[in-house]
Length: 421
Ligand SMILES: Nc1nc2c(ncn2[C@@H]2O[C@H](COP(=O)(O)OP(=O)(O)OP(=O)(O)O)[C@@H](O)[C@H]2O)c(=O)[nH]1
Ligand SMILES: [Mg+2]
Image (cartoon, rainbow, N blue to C red; front, side):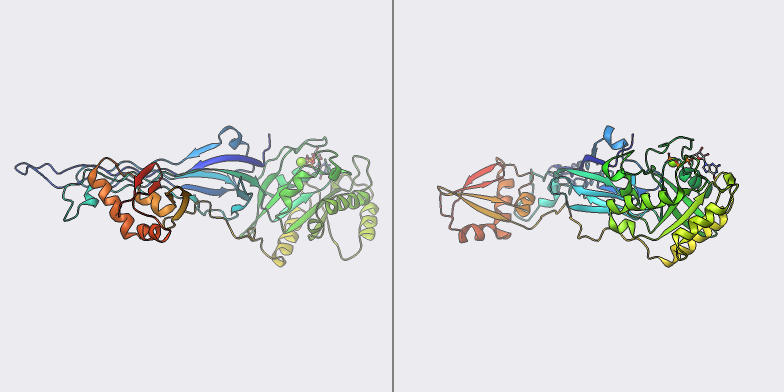
């Protein structure tokens, strides 16, 4: 089964909890706090690979969670970081936010880490909260809890060259003789059911060729396998239009050429105007070469035509050379030009105050989430630390500006408390 669009869920690891611990040494009855910080959670990283050209694996495995950070330990030991989770996808996979459809990343380049979600911060251990007035804090911070996101993976194959043509004209055979790919080849229509990629070596150069299922007249109206595979050659620089010049299946070669081009046009004008090299295949079956001359004549002089036989490998070297020479004249492909959405906008400084009426104020936002992490409401020191942060970080001033008075209620996450001047 070929899948090129799939929804998955990703989550970076949570941060580990900071430790609460006190030094124990012989002869020293009350050692100071030595609880270490929790470790960072693992990141969610995507990598593009040429070894895949199908998203089918994600149908059966749709939830990805990076490892959580480990808690801190005594003796100021920092918790172990969670391991990053690396998700390999076919080159050309576009990741979108499932909710808004906005592009998060286009996995265009190989050998690059696309960090999509960053792991949560580890919580501070109690050693961190030691101060001249707080010698023995009995509290620590919990690790940052990360969110899970639904994203859509959409494959838009990247290749230098796209092979197009009717079924059974020898596209896959050509791919198999020019590249390292070993696609299925058979003497019937629609042997190829999903795109194949092959890497062609030409001296010290490499280029990638994509072979897609054959097109027929009416493909744009869903005839045959339809034209939906054409999206897998939209990200190419050059098209190689393969024609069976021997008319093995009884069609007229030049008519084939016109029909396929008109189907291309119905799909996408831009694709139809992409440079093409016309390859007349199966010349080993020709007795009479006048069909080649006639084809060339009807096509016009300015179009590039090469006669080959994929099966007996005639003229294959010349075909490769011609393709390379054309590619050299054409601009390189570039990733989708968009402003990428940062899914993981970790807001660590924002605060929002909402007046709920009746003297109730709700404080939310990244800053407050950060400082309220792990606050133990019934621990006096923990709570007083929290108050201090509210003051020092300007939240109390902001509340005053909004008109908070003695006796009003302030809601912060799950904590409700009374405001006292
Ligand atoms: N005589 C001859 N037969 C060829 C040549 N190239 C391919 N064939 C045969 O044509 C048939 C179809 O080849 P494929 O490579 O599967 O054709 P395709 O265009 O990929 O077909 P679809 O995947 O169905 O679109 C096979 O039987 C091949 O052996 C050639 O140069 N000469
Ligand atoms: Mg094929």
